[in-house]
Length: 193
Image (tube, rainbow, N blue to C red; front, side, top):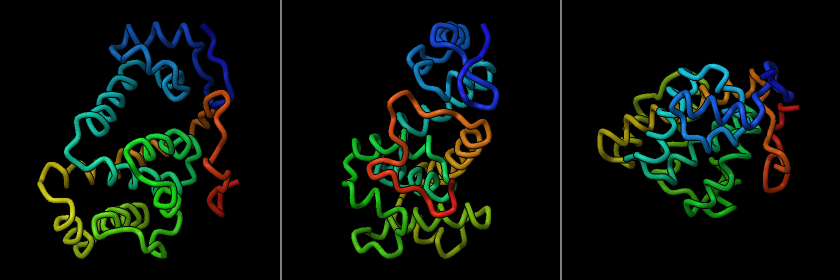
C-alpha cells in the first residue's frame, strides 16, 4: 500500500498499519497513532522503539510525574509539537496540574516545583545543552529520585524522548486528526515556526 499523509516519507493507511503492527509484534492499537503509521514502514525498528517506550511508560521505576515533566520539557525545548500534544493529556492524567505542566516552559521561574521536579528538569536541560548531566545535577537527582533503577530510567527517558523528538521533527510526523497543537493554549516555543 502506498504511504500517505504529510510526513516526509508519508504514513501507512490505518488498515495497512494495523497489519504491519500485528506482523511486526507491535500492539495493533499503536497503529492508530500517526507516529506508528510512519514507523511501521520499518517493523523491526518500530518494535524496538515500542518496547523501549513501553518499558519507560508502563513498567517503570521512575515516578510518572517526573517522567512526564522530563518529556514535556524536552518537547518544549526541542520544539516537538507532536510530543507535547501527545503527552499533554498523559501528564494531566498522572496528576500534574495544568500550571505545573505549563511551567516547564520556564521552570526556573516557577515556585511550585519541588527539589525532585527541579532536579530532573535541570538534568533534561543539561542533556539537551551539553549531552550529559553535570555532577552537581546528578547529585540532586540521586538525592531526589532515589534508587538505581529510577536513575537509570531517568537518563534513559531523557535520551529516549530527545531521540523521539528528533524522529518526530525530522520525519515531520503529522498530529492526529482533530488534535490542536501546543495544548492547552496554542503557545509554541519562541524559536519554533
